[in-house]
Image (tube, rainbow, N blue to C red; front, side):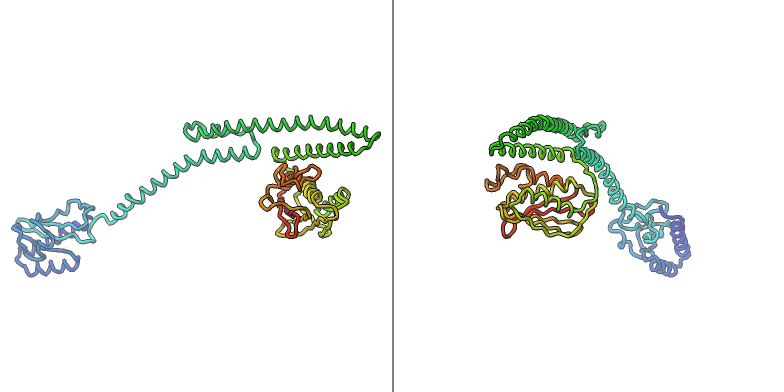
Length: 410
C-alpha cells in the first residue's frame, strides 16, 4: 500500500489539476503538469475519457496498447513489477482524469529487494548451515566416540567397548562399533593369552636353568673341561635371552611409567665402559665426553640397560685389537651419545630393521652363534619409555654408528 502521505499528495495533485481544468486555465494546468514532471522526474498527463490528451505527456509514452488509465491510490502496488504503475485521480463530474506515473520516492517496499535477497539467499543459507551442522554432529559424534575407544584400547585398556557409547543408535555406526567390540574382545583375549604364556614360559625356563646352573657348578668343581665351559656359556646366553624376552614383552604390553629421576649420563657411561673393558679385554674403547652432564626426569634402569645393550653390540661385532669410540655432545636440548664400532657394518636398506627382535643380516654378524638377538630391539623400547631414540648409520670408513638421543629435561 502507498503511504498515507503519498496518497494524499497524489490526490492533492489531482484536485489542483481538476480545479485548473474546470476553470479553463489550460495554460496554468500545463505549467503545473510540467513543473510536477520536473519536480518528481516522472510522467504526468491529464487525459479525457476519449483517450485524448488535454495537457502533459502522450499516452503512447506509457501505454503500448489500448490504455485502461491508471490505478487508484487505494490499490496495492505489486512489488514484483519492474516498473512503477500509473496512478489515476478521476475528476469529479467530468470525463477526464489526472494521471501520474508513481514517483520512485513513493514506491512502497523500499526493503523489498533486501527481503527478496534474504528469502532467496540468507534464510536458505542459514537453514542449510544448521542442517549441515546437525548432520556433522550426527556423523562426527559416533566417529569421535569410536576414535576415543580406539585410542583407549591402544593405550592398553583391553576392556573398553565402543557399542555402549553409541546409546540407542541403530545404523551403520552401531554396526561398526559392534564389529570393533568383537575385534577388541578377540585381540584382548589373544594378548592376555600371550601374557600368560610368557609368564608360564618364564617360570618353566627359569626353573630348569637354575637347576642346570647348580649342576654345572657342581661338575665344574670336579672337572673343568672346554665342554663344561661351553655349556655354561650357552646356559648364560639362554638365561639372558629369557630375561630380554620378558623385558621386551613387559615394555610392549604393559607400557610402564618408569621412575622419573635425575641422571648423570657421564657417571653412568663410566660404569658401563668399565664393565665392558673387563668383559671385552681384546677391544680398545676410546671415550670423549665432559666431566659431568645431568638430565632430568629420566631413568637409570632404562637408560643404563639401553646404552649397555648398544655398547655390548658394538664390542661384540668389533674384531679384537680394533676400537670402539664413545662420544657425548649436547644439541637442541638433547644429549647425543654416539657409539662407533669397526665391525662389518649393515646394508643401507637394513639400518632400521636391526631394531627388530632377532633380526639377522648375514652369517658374518652372527658370532658365537648370535645374531642381533633382542639387544637393539630392547634398547629401542627402553629409550622410548624415557623419551629417547636410537638410530643407526654406516660410518664412511666402515663400521656401524649408533646414535642415542636423550632429552635433557623430558
